[in-house]
Image (cartoon, rainbow, N blue to C red; front, side):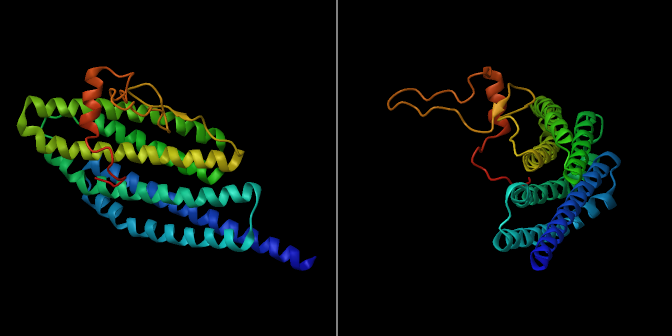
Length: 276
């Protein structure tokens, strides 16, 4: 009986260690996002450098969490809520690592913002989007640390506003490029920054979905809130084309202008999830 109690106590200690490491990883990734925001809004080169320098710490913690999680799965045979939490931790660390990569990429390009701020291109939308992403990431970390499913739902819904800002920014920057070819280089850099911010928001949404499942044992709705268009499922429902017949429209609910914008936004749909 005493031996069984010792085993249970040891398992709880290892589970607490796993939670602590994931939490630490989340705080570092959130700090990277805050520093990237400072680099954009304040043209702070030191903040940009620090955001980039923190990235290896996130990568190291990801490997540590993966090792401990695999050890717990292999040796402890967890069940129920413990099993959900460990599997969620494995997936969450992948999303946190991507957030860190995207934040570092934004920081690298942040000085471009200062270079193009000459009055020809408005950057207020980009700054607002960056602030919203930063707020959502910090609330995501809070939901992760407190295991609060209600806060997780709030973060999940808040991503729609970020998507709407990205759609507006994308179209505005494309318009700047069309109106004056001299804007192409600067607007391209800003598009990369905006896309990286949008992806950070998406990964934060992934994380709160894992938190919600780990705590409640239930999945969030299959339809994610999306800005700028009707909600789309995380799974494709496009039917296969009939042999010899026309290819079905993958975006039947979008207008022609919306489809053209979507094609510009994602000209390479098979591209991997890598920061620009």
